[in-house]
Length: 264
Ligand SMILES: O=C(O)CCC(=O)CC(=O)O
Image (cartoon, rainbow, N blue to C red; front, side):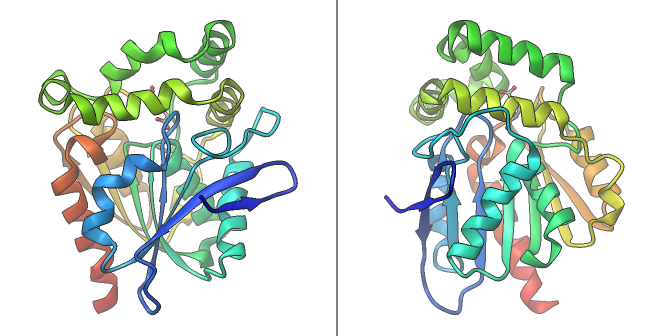
């Protein structure tokens, strides 16, 4: 289990498809998940890309420094990983808070990113009050009581009936997330708002929604695609964790968008 040791915490990361000469692709998970949420994509993409995945601070195998965090902290962790691994430039794909991390990087470290795929995210997710309430809930009772409502936001009943193990694996990682890590990231979400800055993002960008995502509905992803300079939008069947619920079409769309860059 490779880790990067930073002054305040250690970050767990993993590289797949480590073939020299292939372009890098960095995958950035959502709130309350770990890097295994991308397992369905790895087998299909590791022949074409060197794939960097990592656990956000306080998630999975990464330590939780003292909360609260902000988007500069979360984006800074990605830059620290890229620097440590001598990755000058990478494609980037992030879901939800991972998509906000991608927007922060596009604005603050634009030369480090190539093509960007933002899934189930928005330029602004929730409100300061809704994140304060979420922090209050997890501080009071931990994450486990939030599992049923989270399951309902993340996956359709049809998917959970058809692939219960896939849904349970992700929800288990949610229940295991540290309270400090989760609450710290909720604080970052409470502040993150890129609505006034999207027109400064010039990278080719694909925004992918889940048709029935109650957290970041298709209109949010359409607005992202319209707000940046070179955006397009695609919607796939599923709720918030569309990368898992619609894994085959999602992976196909990701590959098509990223490999198109080679012909540009
Ligand atoms: O999923 C994220 O990264 C942030 C939005 C969120 O918390 C989704 C949910 O409501 O569980």
